[in-house]
Image: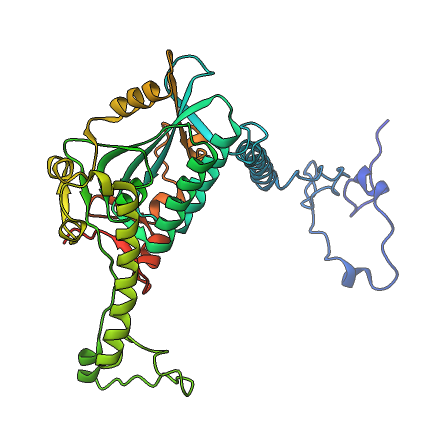
Length: 385
């Protein structure tokens, strides 16, 4: 049995039964009229949307989280490495922060300790030398001391501190030989230190001597006058020499004489140390030798400034003989390795200290030493002039 709709009425869409009733009011204003449909055609309106569950939230921050984890891991690793290094340097792993390298294997109860004095002699070198010498003093197996010098000299005070420290060491251990081994350069303050030794070796190419004092001074007065710049430094009344030697003021004769007297007294101190250590061996009057000249090894030997021409191994052998050692073990002290060296000696990364250094006359000088050298002070220093 078929159902025929009333005349003028189209087929009934069964989906309309699932439609909600129209809101009250004029239905035509709520929804546009449905266009007439032909029998068998689908209505033009799309069916109501079906309910779909909301998509799961996106897991954002993957990249940020990865960066954070990497950064945290790196910081932890660096912190761990740095702490290990600090323990290593502080002595927990190295016994007092002093490091040594065995140059000659032998009987560990017949040690020859080697302490280097390299570069410009300033406060840092004096403190370092004292630290190493204290380490030697604590080691009862050390039977002889060799001091290797490769230095153009440095400040008067630091050179004298090291000289005094060696003399104190010899007084406390009068039977222990102290031998000096000069490398390429042992000039001025370097030679000042050498005079504390018992026996001095110089290599054939060693430059030594240069006995004298520098008091560096520069005067820019005429240059400043050209540019219309005048110094207005205030000096307390009565302290007429407080600003003596100012590089910004015209030189005064009384200032020059005053500073000259200071340099001469430091020079007398230098000559006194040479006389104490070498007087009986000098072949000419000290006044003729201590003229500021630098000497090659042959000339230094002829003048009595050194005892023998030889290399480091000759100095070790001489020290062993003097200490009656039959199977010497030579141990050289050195600085603790930097963090870069501790992480790997093959790394091409330069340490911060090495990046702040310059080379002057073949001698490596860091920025702090260069600043100290340019500060007015008495210097036992050879400048290659």
